[in-house]
Image 1 (cartoon, rainbow, N blue to C red):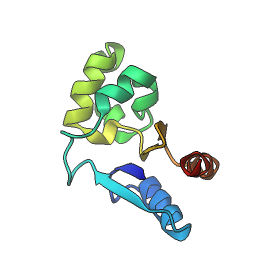
Image 2 (image 1 turned 30 degrees about the vertical axis):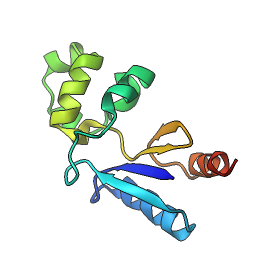
Image 3 (image 1 turned 90 degrees about the vertical axis):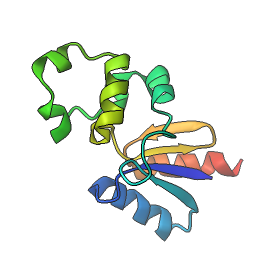
Image 4 (image 1 turned 135 degrees about the vertical axis):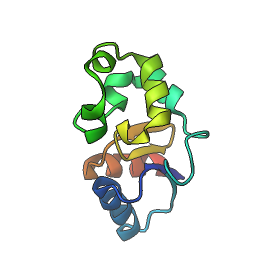
Length: 118
């Protein structure tokens, strides 16, 4: 089963959800805002990939950070800020078959689906 994390009004999340639905893929959607951050495995993502891969440094939320926050960014600060401001997290985050992916690329979704069927 695929779990898709994100925010429902995010354009990239909308594209990913539409792609999954158009391809008949069952998934569970976890909205960072509506469903909360308590059960989001943000620490695991940071440990596995590092803040540089988890945070969206092109987002409005990133640009709103202070220069000090950006310069001092590490996994611990990313955890605190990500829980407080989930729009900092790259979206969508997809978990399936023991793999985690950030963003939406059709090729990667096809790879995840293939692994999930094995």
